[in-house]
Length: 110
Image 1 (cartoon, rainbow, N blue to C red):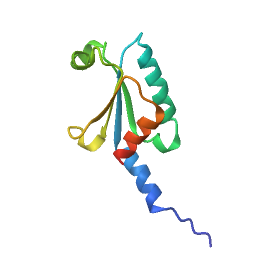
Image 2: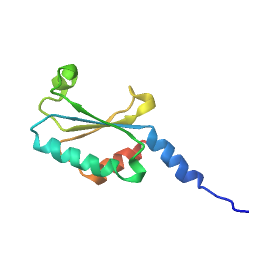
Image 3: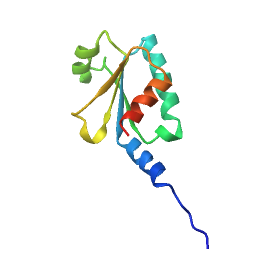
């Protein structure tokens, strides 16, 4: 008889990562934004972080005027939060960040 055991701890971590929402606010023709997108691509391609909810918001899109007004001169900005409690506790990274900073921030919400 073959018994497959799975660690509760590791399955719990994957479940918690799925509850993390990561939003990158950026715009076209922005070198820092291009670098931030590259960093985020590296992070979300890692198996541990694939299940987080990740989106990119172009602040220049007319539908995103609220974000343009807020972050016009601050992009890129990364919001990390619990997807189930979006109105509570949003952590932000501004301008320059690396994979380690993003991973640490995501881990904070697991």
